[in-house]
Image (cartoon, rainbow, N blue to C red; front, top):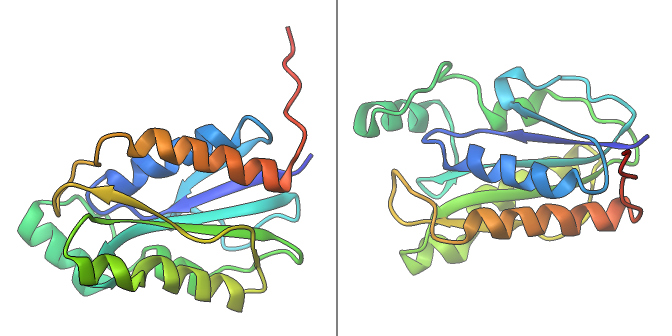
Length: 179
């Protein structure tokens, strides 16, 4: 049976909440595994039909070592490995042929310039294409109310609905309920 894999980086916790909500939506149609980037497999199994990746937008881009360190200093973020996150995972992973993929990011609702540029999700999509993945849908952006969160009201529900929509694109039949 085809599965989904959700790989995320979460510096301050909001991207993890979105990843879990997306997985909740995906599981209506297919089994789902969720992993933070440092624990995700570097060789994605051939039975993974859909890969969803996501993380925070920091300083107009994906989190990198200096950005993670800054989050630890300024916002008391708990980051076990400053040198490895989603960007580094995407640089090192091998994907099976024919895999579909989608990307998300979390970002501030303002300033307008930062939300217009799409930097984190755009980079994620570029790296996914380079790996040979086919984008199943355009990137999705989930809003936080402040640099250190929390998520804006309704964003987790929206992430669940997005996960369900992604699953319907790649696995049109729901998982049978066993009673």
